[in-house]
Amino acid sequence: MDHKVTTDYTRLLGNANVKVYVRARPCADGQSAPEDMFERKKETPSNIVIKDTERMQYGNHAFSFDNIYWTDTTQETLFEATSKCLVDYALKGINSCCFAYGQTGSGKTFSIFGEPGGDKAGLLSRSIEYLFDMVNRQQSKSKVLTLVVSFLEIYCDRVRDLARAYLKKTGRPVSYQTSSSAEWFLRQQQQQQIPRTESAARYGVN
Image 1 (tube, helix red, strand yellow):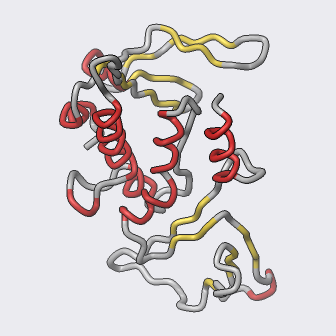
Image 2 (tube, rainbow, N blue to C red):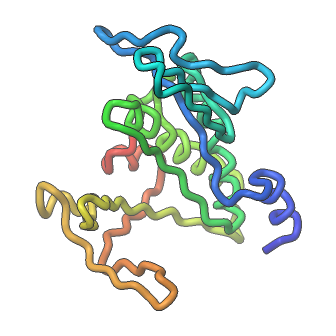
């Protein structure tokens, strides 16, 4: 790996191989929450205290993250701060991964997928658009870059190929094997070349 790439990557992640961010979503219509349930101090913006407003016998709980994005955070701001750099490093040969986790209704789908086009586009479509932009800048007569995508779902310990969903409503099961080092190897998964950003819409990205 290029020394400059390694240095930049270290500067990005510090001593951590994984960065954890929190995004708070606003209450939906008909929902309510105590206004003083969360406490976030300006001097420690990456720390949050969750107050037990109903059962004070349990006390408060303090958590620290790499950063916290409040309810007024836009999709663009979230992408610029968390995912754009992953595309940059992927283009430099560094494997990158971004995923959302949380309880049902916490806003995972909105953050990752958002709504088609416009200001509410999610991290995935923004990453692909940015990736195509960078590829178009780097391509030349002597260098041709090809992009392929695959869509897999791991649910209830089963791996499904969502790009082959037309074969079966729930997607086609994918066989896999593990090596002695616990690495996964997927077999016969569908990989589709995408010549431009618009093509990604056929696979549920936009």
